[in-house]
Length: 246
Image (tube, rainbow, N blue to C red):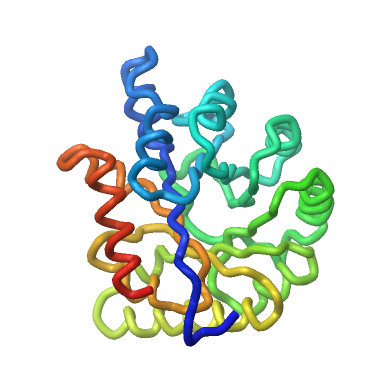
């Protein structure tokens, strides 16, 4: 890939929090499948859903409904558990992003320790890959985690951008440099780098401008903005900001 003319940066939209709002009252409204259709209309390139152990937002029955509602590829975020592996193998999403998960956390708080969990992850990555599911590892932008992804044979890594998103002052440049350097390192070693977590209209463009990045996955912020301007407008604005720098 030429960094002088990088390809269009893909936007994956996480619709989990449409389901979170639905689950607050029960019933079927708002419908995540309808949200997926709006994302497709607004210029999104994929739909991300995170089926958590406690089913706090997306539920099992949502998976096939969302997939049937749109032709966009589905990226299933999942913990490295036997239960989630079985569900992924049954539904066969386009991609599966393995993420760390703790029951008590409000959202994913950091990257997966792929280096420290090699023996646990290796059979899961292998089975997903054998089923034709593109495996991604949600990791911190660190050399040892990229090396672990290489050893595991994962074709994609997604960098946790939370530290960048929450940084202030001089720390912003430091966190940005980490992501820039690790995106280059991943691409150099044949791994496609993605990024996501905490990205907003205000901070997305420096990340989107990194030429090696192929995809951003953004959810909570876009659903929050949708309350004020509507989901289609929310996604279109993010798409436009990304396109300005790519």
